[in-house]
Amino acid sequence: MPTAEDLRARIEAAIPGAEASVQSEDNVHFAAQVKAQAFAGKSRLEQHRMVMDIFGDQLGGEIHALSLKTETP
Amino acid sequence: MSENPMRDAISEAIASNDVILFMKGTPDAPACGFSARAAGALQALEVPFSAVDILPDPRIRQELSALSNWPTIPQLFVKGELLGGSDIIMEMYESGELAGALGVEQPDSDPEPADAQAPTLQIENRLN
Image (tube, rainbow over the protein chains, first blue to last red):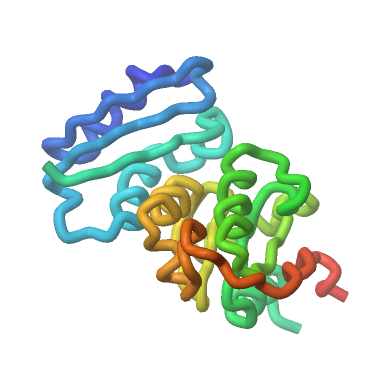
């Protein structure tokens, strides 16, 4: 089962320069806040997609829910 | 016969409903918190919308996500465009963007009564 720390590390590894913080009480429902220059010029939809694409099929499975807040620095 | 009747039924539903929410459960009996919040935002804006429960048939979610390139549920489409999932819907609701996108007043002003809410669409019973 992935942990908040796993998700944080994978987000920061997948999105260069991203600063992520991730919380979860049960390692099934997660909330992540991600700040990244790579989001600049992208719609909120695309920013969220960039983050969700990292987890592929895990989303909706092991990662039941991933609540996202994205922003540019 | 098209080779993907489910995907055609979904894209047809998206095209023919101005506001359509794919969710778990129904607006009156949501089966998940995120779906409940998304449906609640639309109800608070008193906007008529169509709702599709994706739970009865796992193919609905599979084909929908393939179409929209969005992996999670709920998914809200307005005039054929994906607005997003629960987070974006709620962010837009709180900022008033959602009311703007739907062409309605933000509730703190006096909302005019919207007509009765559209019935829940049953995608799977179109596959006869």
